[in-house]
Image: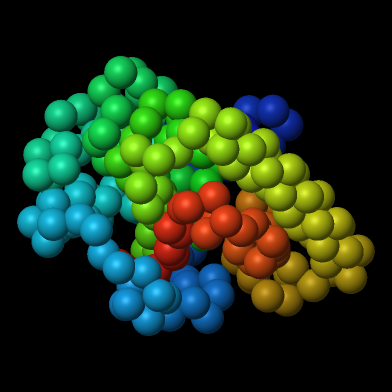
Length: 230
């Protein structure tokens, strides 16, 4: 999976030293997106309870990790593949993803699907794609009826997501520069080393809010949700 474009936890083009906070504080919920049931989001759960439970057990083990961990599960909740990646990416054999569920963590506050995640989900024919973040949130996507998803429609979905993601990233970058100039990040995140600021939480919060506001998943037949689970 593509992680967040190779920008997470890096300073001067090399991986930074953990922990995020100098005093080892637990990650705080970076926005007010409280735990909600999928029914409240207008989405019908499509996974068997046992399947969902098994996957969440795996996600609970790894959502606080500072390197990406990926798991592939079948529709019965059986893990068929696991791989540990780097701080910024983890690669999966795409032939294992067809009609299965893949989940991985992003070592960032809020879970944001990267364009590479979306492209993998589409090209591999995944049943569901999932990503977790340090805040304990899970973002999920799945097609309402993948059997009716035409190639041109898939390409349009990937193309539109890449465009919206790029626009969201630019807006987040502009916002981060503004906050830096105003020196507000020191007031809000005392104890956090400065080089995490680009990817922690104001930056990503701006980015994901833009995506969720401007990306029309439903138009492409995609269910999308982001819930607080852990």
